[in-house]
Each structure stands twice: as C-alpha cells, then as structure tokens.
Image (cartoon, rainbow, N blue to C red; front, side, top):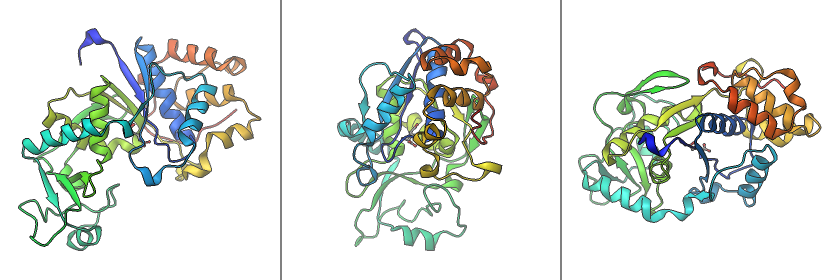
Length: 308
Ligand code: GLU
C-alpha cells in the first residue's frame, strides 16, 4: 500500500437477498474503520454468480444502506462489468505456472478425499489432475495449486492467522469450466484495481483469506490490511439463517428505528455508544462512531445483536 494514497475500504455484498444483520455489521465496521482513518469507503456489488442473484436485491441493498446514512464514495462497482480484468489476471496466473485444468466432479473429489473436511468449498481437493488431466476428461474447473507450507497474516480483530491451504481445501478453483471466474480470483482483482488497502468483512470469510493472499502473492499485488469481524448469531451462539436475520425484520420489530439498530451494531462491535445517541439521526450516530472508533475494542467472538 502506498501511504500517500490514503486508506481505501469497501463493502462488497452479494445481491442474492436483502441485507441481513451480519452484512450490516460488515457495512458499519468497514465504514467506521475507513472513515476513522480519513479514507474512502467504496461499494461493490459481487454479482458474479448469476444463478444465485435475486432481481431487485442490488437496489434494495443500496436503499437500505442509504437509510442508515451509509453513503459510499464514487460509483458503485459491479463484478459483472469486469470480466476482462479477471481474464488478464487468470492469464498471468497461467503464465506463472500455478494453474491447471481439472476434470473432477464434486463426487469424484468426495470419493478420492481420505479425510472429509467441511470447508466452504466442500472436501479438500486430492490433487488428481495436478500432473495432467486424463485425456477423455472435459474441463470442469481451473485450479491454482496450493502452496507448500502455511500462509500467515495478521488480522486486526482475529490476531495471528495461519493456514495450510493444502490441508484445508487443497488446489482451489479460480475459474469454472464454462469460463466464469470464481469469487477467490475476482475479489482479489477487484480490490487491487480499486486500490482497496483495508478489507473489513465478516469472520465467515476468514478461511478464504489465505487463498486470496496466495493469489495476491503470485500476481505481485500489495496485501491489504485485514479485519474479520465477529459473526452475528442467534441465542446461545446458534447459527442464524440469512432469511431469519434480515435488517428489515429487525427494523420491523423496532417500529422502523434505524438509529436504535445502528447503535446496537456499534455496541456489538465493542464501541460503547452512549444510550442517548439512539435518539440521534443515523448520520449523527455514524459521525460519533467514526470519531470514537477503536479497532482494538472489537471482540473476536460473535454473539447476538441486542437491540435495546
Ligand atoms: N460478496 C461477499 C459476500 O457477500 C463478500 C466479499 C468480501 O467481502 O470479500 O459474502
């Protein structure tokens, strides 16, 4: 990162549904951290995965952000507008010799994997096609070989994080056989092109970060600062489905008070807003949050959002 360029943070929701409270935490956390540093806060719609998108949700997310006073800087970026940049990065990875075509189906990978591992990509890839695909196979994905050893980084919220990619997910897909690029590659290219040097997002993405750092390393990109925020759960740490956890539902329970919910998010992030702040407008609450923001107060572990 070139310090002269200043801090550039971002929020990158996928328009697969309306904003849920976990995403609101990521939006508020990334906004506060970037603005506290006097930086810019960008909005990018991660709309690469077309089948999972729901019509109207991109607009819905933007209107919800605006209703909280979370106003982004500059134009909204959309992954769907960037295939040329992903292709170029993909070709550079190919030239670096880290990419290989793979004909394995999920089922074949599952059968070959000796130790099932419930990672977000499913089972660890056993390396079947790394030394060459069988001649009859059709290309189902393009994979980057997992690096030897661990990828380690410092996370502002989670502390020191190390991962051996080979044992967690193995060689990972960066492009599908039909030509579509995978999230792991797109997010790295998008952040790099937009000059993002501060990535603040939910801890559900923590296990993806080493793969993204590996891609950055091969492409020679600067590594952003990372901060993976605690996850919102139900009572007693239970997992919340996105549908049960919509911002609109929370607001419904509150009779439409964005300020109350915003203050609860600040409390969730360990920022201790004064009780009287709830009566302020969203821009007032955010201004207080930006001024008093301290990353060191964010708890690593998640929990419920308690609205008072
Ligand atoms: N679009 C991703 C999601 O909604 C987040 C991407 C990121 O923050 O890196 O889960």
